[in-house]
Image 1 (cartoon, rainbow, N blue to C red):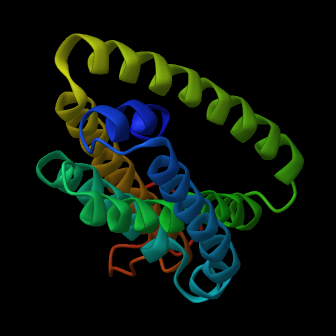
Image 2 (image 1 turned 180 degrees about the vertical axis):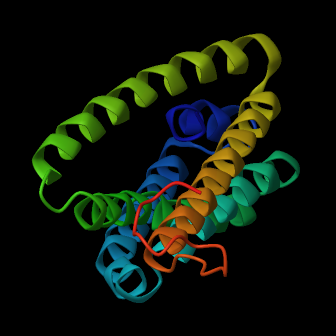
Length: 181
């Protein structure tokens, strides 16, 4: 929702000219590239933490863009970090998919692509409606809420993964594995 409407935001809120707009988009693109190169080190050791922290940071950026959007340098820095994180997140999710479904990665990958396409469509449509009817601040605020929901779901997935790999032992366990209590 945020990324799709950066151009009108930068033109109407930040009031950048075409050259500055191009420079900001270049900075986002370079940050995208660098983020994609570096994310592998993080997901190797801290996959779930990375999948939780990235949307939290992106939500913070969406919120900070609301009051700082009229300041070109602050907006450029925030969007540079957005770019760094924005393409790093999919690398984390594809890593999660490969680890979670090692024998069904192709099927999971197909489903992931379909979900990504659906969310791009829904996000851009919803973002456009919100942007046109209520303004950029509502669009960015709703984006932040969705990103925080994503972080919460990532934390839930992490907790479930941890529970599945480290079952809690209690004195009430049946001696027969899988037996009902």
